[in-house]
Length: 133
View 1 (cartoon, rainbow, N blue to C red):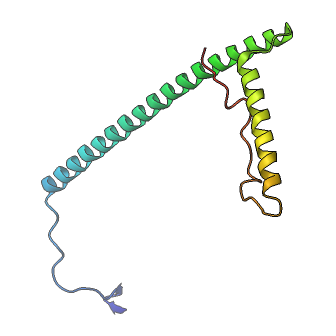
View 2 (tube, rainbow, N blue to C red; view 1 turned 180 degrees about the vertical axis):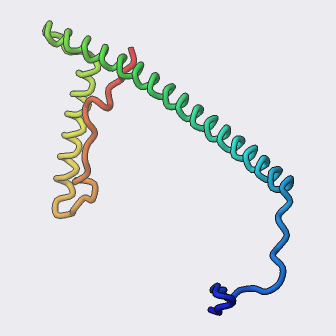
């Protein structure tokens, strides 16, 4: 630092200061930037609106499916309360019994061998039911 005439001057570039930026050009750049910002914002909102509407459609479809399943289960429960077993459940139960007997027979045939699929989870009995009326 240098002291000149009682004032401290910082070392820096010598010469003229750069000319002031043209005010009109600066305003035009600012306007253009604002236009681009508004366009990006508009696109973002359009995307979000489409996303929300697609999710709402998916929710409606799931609600309708849930209502169908609820009605089916309610009908099956009412039938079982009356001592009747719905045909879908009978078919499922007989199919499971056949699968279990087939699995047991195949396990006995493969005595001593390990089956990689024997530890896998089985599907829930309700998943394989026909839910449509």
